[in-house]
Length: 113
Length: 115
Image (cartoon, rainbow over all chains, first blue to last red; front, side, top):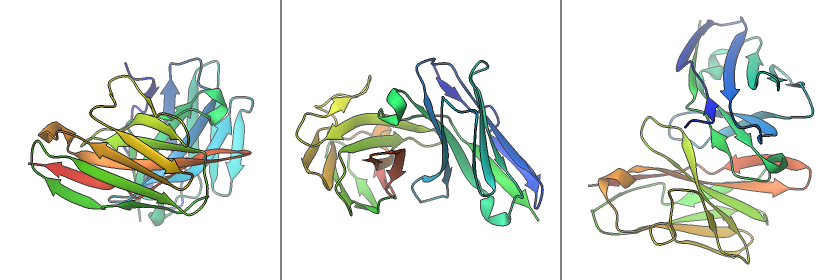
């Protein structure tokens, strides 16, 4: 049973517009959430995280929103740039992030020029 | 963050043999993790490797198949034993640098193909 779900395998967005990637989770014990970006033949690169005590965290062009009641989080990238084209993974952890991560299947973001 | 290297970067192995993957970190870290990414799938946690204690394995992963060593705070190895084609995956190590940082940082991965 998948505890972290990314229901969109791919997403195409025009350069300069906003990219919104979505993630849902089922395990109520998760209290720390992370987004990773992955290029082919490389390991995942950490982007941004959020603790369950917050509902929003911002870092430059990246903002993560957390809706605990809906068990939903989203990553907003604005403005989208060609270098943002990659696979984005949502991950969750219990124990304040001390535990290993449970990953979604990823969303392939394609930024169109 | 931390700089993490893995060796080998890729390998092709015969069925029934074993492969040992090394993970080296440029700083001392308490918590290291090993993950697997099967073709077309997400990353799955294999085990948590803390220095000075036995590795803790996730459901579906056993020590006989995936023995792990953690001799010090900057190094770990994962062995994939008795290889079968189903073990063809990318294997990644990650570290949690601790303190106020709960993020995990990943190595570049080891791509294993079993014939």
